[in-house]
Image (cartoon, rainbow, N blue to C red; front, side):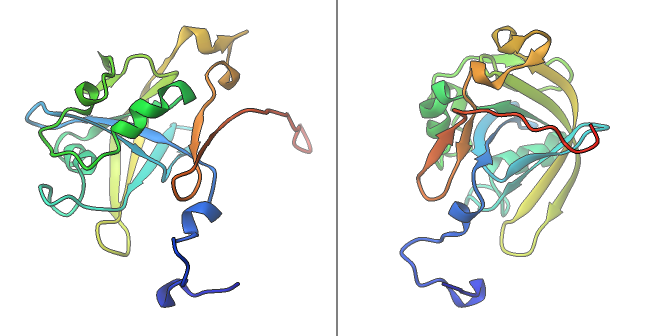
Length: 201
């Protein structure tokens, strides 16, 4: 099968997300200038640089109570900071609850019963029990082609790692089963791990 996206795929559901998978999930926590808090998962997310460490996520839809975007991007525009929380399999239901189209007044930490902790380097909450959290300062927001498509880039200025995820001085993902997004309504978690040595190393 071949299709041009501009012509449509003629399938029951868009296959694009299923093709580009699995994708790590950035559970983005933000705080607005008015002090309101937001927590939402984004599967268009990844690390993009080592030195300085940088990450990005993309928001691809809008809410009627925000200016052409969603709560996360709106809050980041106001404050210039955000926190990326790693999602583990054990928190899949709480993560899913925070993905709802809630009004801006709704605090997703409370809605999903998630314990929060204050970040160390930025004015923002983080998921207290997340395997890891990355405190970020905004570097740029890029408007992408299409309606309400924004890529948010940030420099990581603080890193939290849960103690039980550290083994022999290394962050061990086998201790918490990272959750990843597939297509449609499907998710997966890391179950099998193998190592490869790159040529020349």
